Amino acid sequence: MASSPQFQRLEPQTAITVPGDAGLPRIGTFCPVCGRITQHTQYFSLPIAWSDRDIGIFGSDHYHLLCCKGCQNILIRHETTFSEDIDERGRPEVSYRELSLGSAGRSACDAASDLPSGVRTVYVEVLKAVNLEMTLLAAVGLRTLVEALCIERRCSGPNLASKIDGLVNSGALSPDQASFLHELRFLGNDAAHEIDAPPVSEVICALDIIESVLQTVYQLPKKAAEIRTSRSKRTRAARIPAKTQAPAPPPRD
Image 1 (cartoon, rainbow, N blue to C red):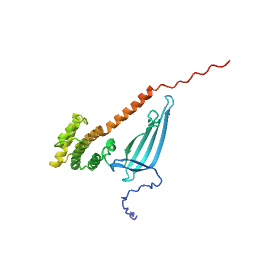
Image 2: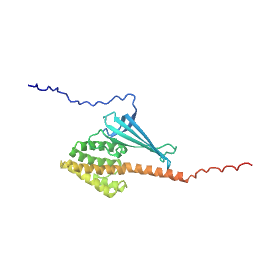
Image 3: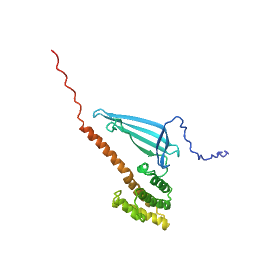
Image 4: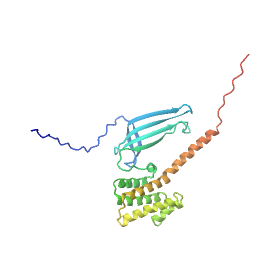
């Protein structure tokens, strides 16, 4: 009769082990988990250069694998350059975007790094509540985030409704966008005063709305300014006449 197999009990691993980073380069960038700019260790880098000789353009794509020193969240940073995008000194302008791989649930929106400190603090806490499906706290937090936006934009009034309307009067938002924020106000009021926890789907919709508004107020003006600057450079460059080569002297007899 065959004996029963013997199994060894293995204790689960709970510690996160990150390879040593001595001597590795570090980059300061926004961490969507920590909710602020933190130091990231660069563990891997892949540069790719490209060119099109037919039309005389070239550029590069540079990929970095980063790990946050604070929370070990993993980011892929993609840096790009293009021969037609140069600064006033003739140096290539570098643009970049980042993809978070190590955070659970929903990551911070692109506008998070452009938010003022007070607004960003509330936004990060709301995001944590949403990812934990704590919908009651998330709904109250969303209303607080609208309030923080109004305070930062210096919209005064006896209540939040009038402050939201002040965003329209100041030109920061359109009337339709303000009406969306009123829906968030109602959602937060019900959660705070009626202890009415909304479903996750409603909270996600509300988060989509406030992120769109934050992008309109804090990120789009910056992008529009970049376009104006780029167009101005191209316009000035087009007005500079091209240098013509002097004709060769006639041959001597």
